[in-house]
Image (cartoon, rainbow, N blue to C red):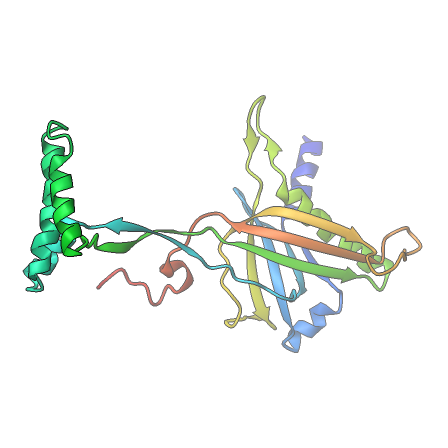
Length: 259
């Protein structure tokens, strides 16, 4: 029981731990330094937190998907109702009507209806307006690429850099939940700050999974601290939001759901 109690205490300590790099960032935040906060989220709540300088080149890949729909006779009927019908519409309608006759006859007309209507329209130089319109399908799930360069000025900072590296890698992977089951990796919460206040000029990012994590050691030179820690660690992270978003997720004050 004593061993189990110690394990639980260690877990609680880990969940509430905060990593800051570089160490001087703590004091610079009081002066309004721009930085990013990344937290892990699991079923038990908020886990460890990392504070880093603002990454360069933050890209926001908003995108939506659309397809097309041919309204055909329905679109033509709307035009007639609005009083926009002409003699040319009579010819075009005859071509479409011939196709409908073939369809209703189940092929018994051998396509003669469509052919007759088509020839009439062809000779008159008239084509049927398909009334094609754009149809919204969905919005994309967004991915964000964030890169960080951790250059440690002391062995203590290099130890913190290693903990931050493990923070990302550990929370990227699933856990074994059974003989054939895996528990989902932890989610991440990403927020931008200017000093101690949220930075309204930076994007809103919903809860994410860490999709890729690439680490490079000593990219600018082969230098190590006395304990063997690399002086420089480059981390390239790709976070993917857990779901598609709506306007209300990004601008809650503007999306009331009312017309």
